[in-house]
Amino acid sequence: MSPSAEKLLWMYETMIVIREYEETMAKVYLEGKLPPNIQKGLAFDIGSGPVPGEMHLAAGQEPVAVGVCAHLRREDTVVGTHRPHHFAIAKGVPLPAMTAEMFGKADGLCHGKGGHMHLFDVAHHFSCSGIIGASLPPACGAALAAKKRGQDLVAVAFFGDGAANQGSFHESLNLAAIWRLPVVFVCEDNKYAISVEKSDSTSVAWNTDRAAAYDMASALVDRNDALAVYEAAAAAVARARAGQGPTLIEVKTDRYLGHFQGDPETYRPKGEVAGLRAHDPIPALGAHLRSLGLLDDAADAALRARVADTVAQAYAHARAGAYPRAEDALLHVFH
Image (cartoon, rainbow, N blue to C red; front, side, top):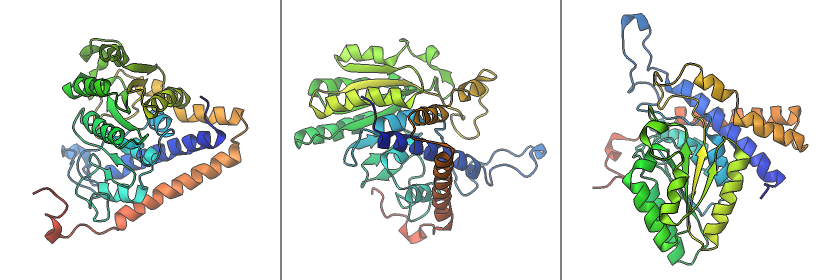
């Protein structure tokens, strides 16, 4: 299934939005965290700056998000991971509210109380969690609700290759298969579970090999390519909407940055990231658009300027927002 011209342009622009957003956050996040003089031996201060706490960025993994979300409706459910921004952006979560949440501001998605790993947007049916493997059970729940209501809606659980070794992975696949739930499980294989290589932690070469154990359809995308992901997701989403049950997709993708910002990345071979960046999926999709006559230098420049302005406005909005009031500390939380 080939995407329409409109869909191709959406995928390309959305990938650029994600990259611009993540690269901007990489700079903003460091504000106030690095000592004025590193020679003094002062440590990286994770709690300082406008965006305190951990930060996991997805630059390089854009094809997974856009290739799948290109097939989804607003009412479909997406459950992301601790590295969630690319999924949220591709699902349509508003950048100003999402960014305000990361800055801890009152007008953030969760009133500034969730942070970047716990984004929740009811209007766009998006959520995520900092717990490894936590995306799969809620996606099954959303899929079960859609099935019981007779709706042709789909739920998608994104997760990393490390999460495929969690019990929640196997339990969710088993349940989804038994009940033939309209859910698509999407594994982002970026080679590393934090700092541990997949080959050192997983007994199979590809997690899609495990689908057979649950009599489940599967698809392997062994390259970081938005069009290949789009094709695999097309079949999986169509299967789910038609009541034919779940699918497990695995995508070999690339993480350009550390597991978290501040990660020394000593576990990576020298030159690995440079090698990955040499096969950047954004220029590759841009070249495809040019070959179809859908993009030229002027249009590309205008698109990138528009994206840069949109992202800059989101960050400006987050900086300008007010923090939650102290007296509201117990609002919007479980008691």
